[in-house]
Length: 487
Image (tube, rainbow, N blue to C red; front, side, top):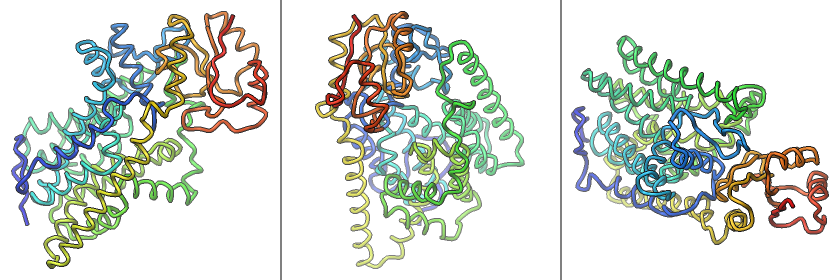
């Protein structure tokens, strides 16, 4: 069995004959559909992220003024997470033009960096071979692949978190200001990009050296930076009324009763087992947790798994609906998968090794199948109704006038149409609202009779009938999309 590697921050990767194979494999998978527009899974979140980037570039905005597309005729400045990723994409747009593959390319680079650091983390804990396998699992598992090139800040989150964990371990074992600074940088970026890493990343890092005051100082700096940003972001909300919905009675993240429902936990386990661990990774993870510890620092991994789940429980509704809340589990799970896989290899007979090869092949087949069915196949613009409708909107409505998008909280149609406007629910549409927004410059009402949001069906019933009547549509014609242009 390999021994833990030197903790020096060198680019040379340890491992078997092809040490860079996990990175190359990861890059190849993340290049699939690199040119895809913002459609498919989580298009609503990607559309918001991409809109921020586009507005940063087109309007030459500073990073502290994130602007959404759904602000109507207001400034559009909104209460958001710290938009470091979107601002970086905006800079790429500034230099190379507005191409969405640049945004996906930035995510890809961040994800490759995360694979590299996860591989180093596993190597430092369990030896070179275990680290190599852990890096390979992180490279090919479906959740890691998809969010490793989606237009979202998740890839940057994984990179910064992996940096904090890998350098935090280095600081525990050999100290050093450089290790401390890199660990602190990773923690600060992760906590700004998403709030919850203060908890699920901060606790494992403090556990690595809770008696060392510099680690506490790094945590305090991350906390202060996060508080400072969200205080500023909340001020934007008070000025414009626009928010991603973090706090307050209108936020949809906090349904605590869900935590008492067995289905809540069962659905999350089932989803993560399939999309996160490709089914066979679940028993392998259990085996990795069951194996005796090789060193004290290894305790950060099961601790990390636990606090990620607890952190998700702090926002139960969001965690249940949005699978990327479970994505950080892979940072702690993949090194354990590598440890377990190496142990099985060392203990297996010749026939056993053949079965392991079959099992690895099944993991890859399951991963590729999940990626194709659940993600890649939904990114084909030729089969996308919302993409086709957006192209029609571009040709039939004036670009400088806002739209009323009856898509609830989903900004995908506005983004794809390259229009500003308002997001409203079908229930909220009435003559008074339409009249008021027309006076503010609205040029059309747009939406779909089949979907409310891109991921939510528009069921038959009184709400649809009322909307059709208001828009002057025969109830027998409520199928497909609609673009109602005002006179």
